[in-house]
Length: 303
Image (cartoon, rainbow, N blue to C red; front, side, top):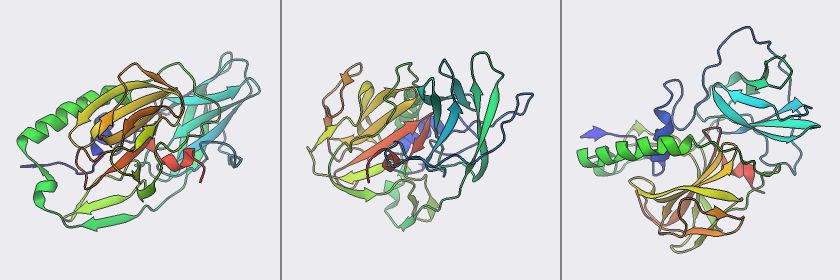
């Protein structure tokens, strides 16, 4: 049998993983190309105010908030060739950059294009962060895939590659404070790396919230449903597009109450908690994606 990395929500991660040989699961930071574009001098970004969401955390799996200064029109910003969310107004624009979990600590940069001005780069520093590791011994059948399951996995992965590339012109609110989609204990932390039978798997790409089957799952921000389905690893799944490259994903659902194209307001029900897919019990897996990088949902909610 073929061996496939096992993570209950790894399927979504692997969809994007195929697009980049540079970085790992569900993290994409295209290699910056050197050229004639002027390089802005690296400077320490001011710490975000406590009432600003997402909170800045310049670590792998975190978010950088980079000041772009004033401009009559919204600047464009790119991490490699991936557009970056830009929020604000003519007085002050801010690039909100998702940092992939696979990013090596050190210097990074974005490219900024402002009408009437030369292209420039803004540098920032990614600090190291040590996420927890969990070692487990499980039955081989829970790690290895049959040829039939492998074929299904590959087909679903290719479909999700298109879903995760969604980029719409609609812009989310300037303050991206999300409501927690379901109440409950956080049962597994973002970035946790599991080792099954001595084989290292992809880091956990979201937040797990323990809740009983049937508990309503609510939209954390206004958004549009861009995908629903029953996936091999993720089970019942819904994806929401909040605009500008900000997406959220909800997995292991027992029931899906929306369809592709539905537009939801904050707090509207989209599904119910379940234990579908490869899981050991009912819970919600909630992921937040920003410029095609999975980032820590905790940065978007009040502590």
